[in-house]
Structure formats: C-alpha cells, structure tokens
Length: 113
Image (tube, rainbow, N blue to C red; front, side, top):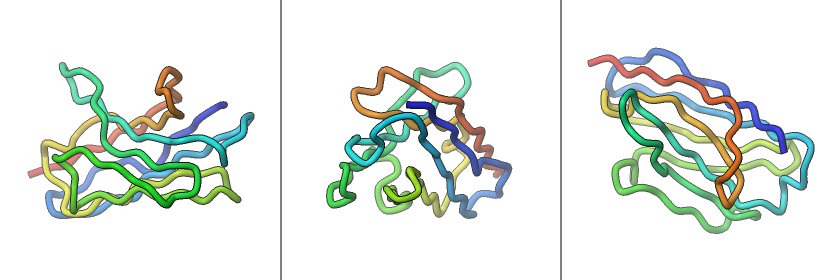
C-alpha cells in the first residue's frame, strides 16, 4: 500500500483542518487505518484509528472530542477532521495501516498561538 497524506498547513489556535490520506496499491477497504503524529524532538504518537467499515474508532485522550477520523472506502481515503486546534497539536501527521509498520509521507500541521 502506498500512502499520501495531505491537508496540513498553518492555522491559528482554535481553528480547524481536515487531513486526507489516499491509499493505493492494496486492499484498503479491509485495513484498519490509523493516524499518528510526530512533533519536533518527540517520538511518534498514536492519534486515532478506524476499523475497515468505519463502525469502530479509537482516539488518544489528548484529541478526544476535538478530532474525528473517518474513511471512504470507495475513494481509498481516510480522513482526520481536526477542530479546536492547539499549539501542542503542531506535528507531522502520518497515516498507516495496522500494524503500523509502514509509513507514507506525512503532512505538516502548524498551530500558532
């Protein structure tokens, strides 16, 4: 599976962004997909995941109630809607299929205070 994340950018605190991750070359619709992020000087951390049908999602405590993960299997794309953004959300965001061993190109999100 090849992955391409997009939708990052510079946003003020309190703002919103919607990230997309387009997959190709694999059986996307059968995969659990996850979003992770890595801030400068920090380890990559889990943000959210979604099962193949979209009926089950999980979130890191730090983003619960602010971020929403979703997917469109017809478009082979997983999304991350990010609302009420905070400066501490600044990071490069990556998507990956479970078991999260392959990482595509990430997208940079910068939240200014």
